[in-house]
Length: 384
Ligand code: F6R
Ligand code: MG
Ligand code: MG
Image (tube, rainbow, N blue to C red):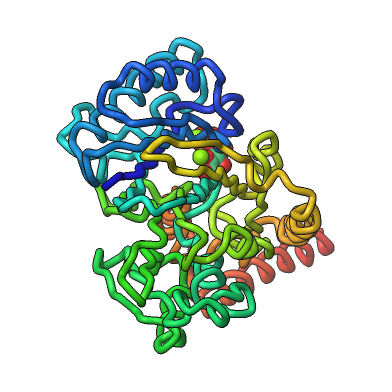
């Protein structure tokens, strides 16, 4: 059995929150190259997030693997501080490592698999958006035959897939078997700020097909920690959706929470690595995808999957949608609704205004009094 882990953290942005500094990526790579516990690794970045893709035999939630990632993030934070990168150590919320990065700031998705004869895997990484951003494409890929022809044609897939959905408020999960329960599934995942897809399994044999970074979502000090910038691992081909069916799930730049100050809805734009540096209004949200062939745990690749002209039109649509949304300025639904804004600094500002509110009747009375006073003064002046 081989475990594929992606563990990610924002350890400091260059410049602002727009990108990562090459020196940090280099340091992370050199630290992982010295490790004896990995089979293979690949270091990359999406926007201001440092992404460690690793394969090993230690299983999920391994203290050694998580500890290694934590050490890399700590050392990269030290370097980020030296370079005075922006928000250095932003995602490292605890001082000491306690066996697992859950709830400590970094996000992680892990999948333990028996490597098939050929095992293509796709790793999606997004910046300036929330984990619910995967709900729409995961539904398309694993439940919608208009996206995935294999659901109709391939006998291995014809029984459908089961979605594991996390309720981020209650910290509980539910399993929904599709196609039988697609309406129930959509009731939940159509509200991506509360319900997020955590895993997908093939009904025929229970094989894991997808796993996302929702595992890190936990409520700490009244705040959702690690609400931002998710990652996702998907297995493809041979009874799983084909690589092209998985990629097709991203052919519509759907709106997702995130963007500026994590407080706006904006289109998720699929881009090649060279364009994964969100600068317009700190966005719009980006998603990159690296494809690998696993070879006894070795990561053969990567291929920069969105670096393809067939996604040009999706990017253009995303830019048009970004313009359209931006023209709303501070108005909803560009700005997030009150429930999502609860986790920003906005409640503090609302609180400061609290005492200035009067009832509508009182407001009218006050206005009337002021008008009368003004009138009286004018009349008095006339008679002087
Ligand atoms: C969004 C994000 C940025 C910042 C924004 C303000 O996830 O990281 O949009 O929220 O640049 O950053 P501060 O408050 O650090 O100046
Ligand atoms: Mg940042
Ligand atoms: Mg980020």
